[in-house]
Amino acid sequence: MERKEFIKAKRIVIKLGTNVLRNSDGDASLPRLYSYIEDISRLVKHGKEVILVTSGAVGLGRKKLNVEKSDDIVLKQACAAIGQSKLMSIYESGFDTYGIKVAQILLIEDDFAQRRRYLSLRNTLNKLLELGIVPIINQNDTVSTLELETLYKDAQVSFSDNDKLSALVASELDAELLIILSDINGLYDSNPKTNKDAKIIKQVDDVTDEILKMASGVSDGGRGGMKTKLEAARMVTRSGGKVLIANGKLPHIIEEIFNGSETGTMFMPASESLSGKKRWIGYATNIIGKIVINHGAKKAVLEKGSSLLPIGVTEIINEFKKGEVISILDENKEEIARGITNYNSDECKKIMGHHSDDIFDILGYKNYDEIVVRDNITTL
Image 1: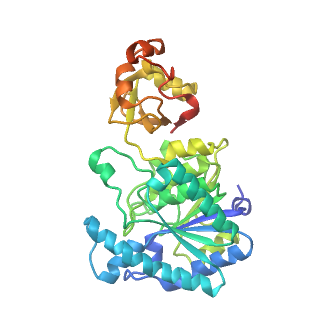
Image 2: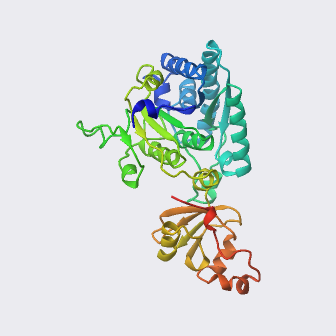
Image 3: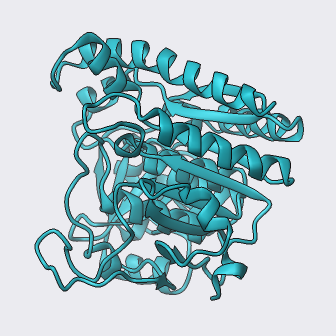
């Protein structure tokens, strides 16, 4: 696809990584930050709707407190609280220079995982954009949801970094384009840090498992890396959007992108996009409960788009309630899909391996023939 076609978008999410917001001393890089603000303001004045997802609060807080990076959760939360106010003061004063209003939104995993809150958030963001306001979104690091991981060591949260958060926002708001700016030029065919002959890949038509395997490493200072960026790209392209990963340290990179510069790696939207409900099932929920299925059930779910019947279930992992989103694993414990369960974990343990006709005799009642109906399954 030609770049001028790729950048055509009314609604855009721009994600700024920690390393592009700071200079070599760990302070906020004001010249670079103000260049982002200037470029985004120009986009808004030309009729674009822009949502900004920003990292950097923890790093700026650490710098202000003069503390080294550590695994102390409480210290990290304190740094986030201090750094977030500093970060927002820069954005507010900068955008005010150009007459652009901004709104701060801090999010945690439950804001997406609970569908009612998810839909409410969507309405709020849409209203802000309608009013010509730039929402500035960050993960709320001052609030910890680690109790999930404490209770269940194999729990999966909807996002744990701002790459995935930006993808969830782009998917939720039906954004046509997600731009991820970091300190990397894009996706390479091999690791450029170890291979001087590595070549940048200009366009990716499908984020396959092979593409995901090309990622390596975590960025210095941030929590993400190329792997999380590729996972974000897969999520957005499955939702019908486009993604560009580019180097945010290049001068006026946002302006350059919208002038048609060939910088970065483009990720094309999938030919068939997921519905809003299936996006939420597949990517926006926190996962505790898991079901293991046999080969026949896996084939039926993946190849035929079938519902999940009790006879195909071989194991139940963790506790879950009826109506919760659960993870569906194959015999190798690899996640292949997610779905909304019609029965709780105790009921599933009793009926697994049995025919649907036996459910009433086993439980004394039967609400569904299926543990998960096909309309409530998102394959991964």
